[in-house]
Length: 80
Image (cartoon, rainbow, N blue to C red; front, side, top):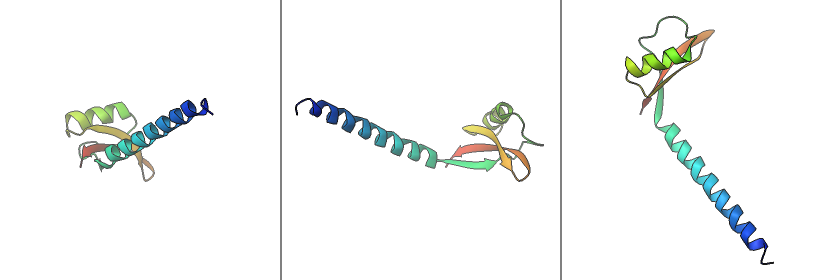
């Protein structure tokens, strides 16, 4: 029975770490607001260019191309 104690301890630590990471990532994701870029024109085909424009021109924390209707648009992410 003594050999099962380290296994239970390891499982407990793993589950605790997993829950901690889950709550941490939810909090981080909840603090970002998505908004369609106001300076991007045309369809968004390159996420790298979208990200660069969001960072430099709109002072966002991130940018990416996402589906918008029938095409793709550049969306910027800001801290809420």
